[in-house]
Amino acid sequence: MATNRTFTMVKPDAVEAGNIGGILNMIEEAGFKIVAMKYVKLSAEIAGKFYEVHSERPFYGELCEYMSSGAIVAAILEKDNAVADFRKLIGATNPADAEEGTIRKKYATSISANAVHGSDSDENAAIEGSFFFSQFERF
Ligand code: IDP
Image 1 (cartoon, rainbow, N blue to C red):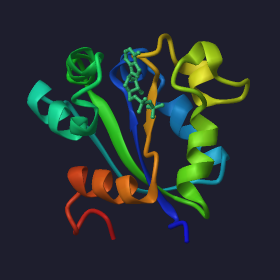
Image 2 (cartoon, rainbow, N blue to C red):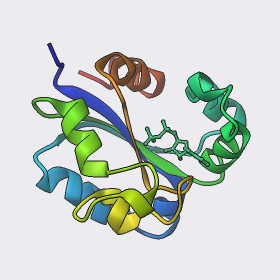
Image 3 (cartoon, helix red, strand yellow):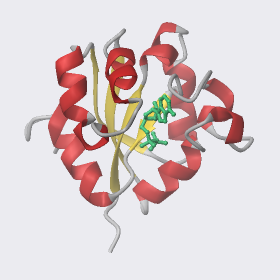
Image 4 (spheres, rainbow, N blue to C red):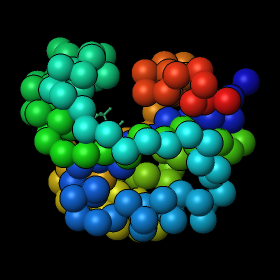
């Protein structure tokens, strides 16, 4: 059964461009409740740990460099069917393929600087949420 939580980050390009508010607004308008949130800047090493599952992919170095290039907003979101519904809301990885009405269509500028992260499974949502938030911060 699908759990009702997912994990997201507003990525450095979107934070830098002043789009935190616009993105959080789209998230809330779509029916997600923000149940944990923080504004942080990752080191390349921490970004590397977060994205370890991608370590064999050719863009891994670029991704870690990019994700540590500026501040991000990390959050846990709650809604029925959260993981799948949030993946729909963010749209395709490459904004060129993202559908109208999605966050990436509106705010992403490239396949790497694509504005938001969204967990791809319930299992990863739980792992990613606990990577950023202690048990006292995700109640
Ligand atoms: P997703 O974020 O849509 O789940 P993934 O394939 O899991 O996409 O890739 C993780 C992140 O790695 C993407 O959001 C994007 O920032 C970056 N990325 C994916 N493919 C490429 C690429 O071909 N070049 C550069 N960065 C990429």
